Amino acid sequence: MDVEKVMQFVFRAVDEVGATLNAALVVMGDKLGYYRILAAEEATTAAELADRSGTAQPYVREWLNAQAAGRYVTYDPATGRYTLPPEHAVALTVEDSPAFLPGFFQIALGTVHDTEQVLAAARGGSGIGWHEHHTDVHLGCERFFRPSYNANLVEGWLPALDGVVAKLQAGATVADVGCGHGASTILMAQAFPSSTFVGSDYHTESIETARARAHEAGVTDRVRFEVAPANGFRGKGFDLVTMFDCLHDMGDPVGAARHVRDAVAADGTWMIGEPMAGDHVEDNLNPVGRAYYGFSTLLCTPSSLSQDVGLALGTQAGQARLRDVATAGGFTRFARVAETPFNQVLEARP
Image (cartoon, rainbow, N blue to C red; front, side):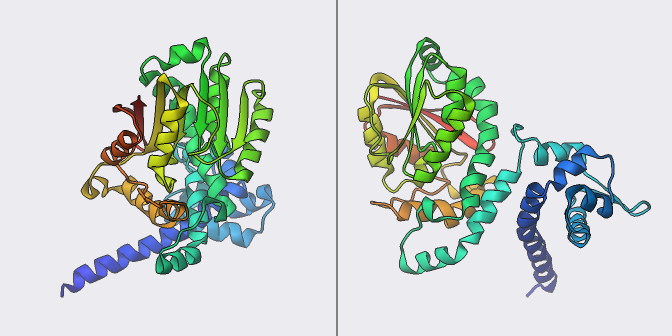
């Protein structure tokens, strides 16, 4: 037994506990406005931050010290002031930045909140539906993925598809399946006003939110939302069917693929946005893979197991397994056309 290695692991575990608690602290700082106030100030004391945020100083003091220990903010012992570096401020306060992180922490905190349900499901081999999770899961999911969609969907991902942008500019019909709060649907509708879009999701509350968001965005003339599962959305002859970060959550992704094949036009396209992953476990043993395997264990796999078939692809399914799903669904052409550190974009054609 190497005692030094034991202690190295112990201190690594201590760091992990701090990181676990920090997920709640980041959400706290986001919801109470601490990061936004720090971003607007050159340097701040705990008393000043408490006064400007309207919160109690003891909480602010301990929160700031935890943030300083985690190197989220810097601390000057000579002045007792804390500073949020501008690079960190972008990631913690600018919601339309592709680097924006609070949504990632929010979905993680909501996911961990439901751990007791996951323990019971693991013992019995059952699942937990998306609708059964804490609301931070739903809100955090949108807040995490939306900046990436804003940065990449219109400018990079859609142009990577063969001939799709020209169709959208001329006037195409699009089905956005598993649309959640409608962020991707609305973004495409804003970019391509000549096209019509229908977003669908089985989660009624998400569709209600999507309808409200479409009204706020002023795109209800070309967007509608419906409550429907992935293997039951309505319509035929779609020029484009999209799925963003949801195929791996489905109980029967092959059944969903077959339904897409029936719904898409003969020269249409199925665009699949999935978490970035390699085809082998060893390809994913990195920080992004670690986070996604965690979400897969606590959120995505239980979601799939709660549905019929329960294939449980997992968040790190990889391109080869996704190709198998598309091929089994009746698609003959399949390729990865774009990627980011967090997403891979796949194109399937009949």
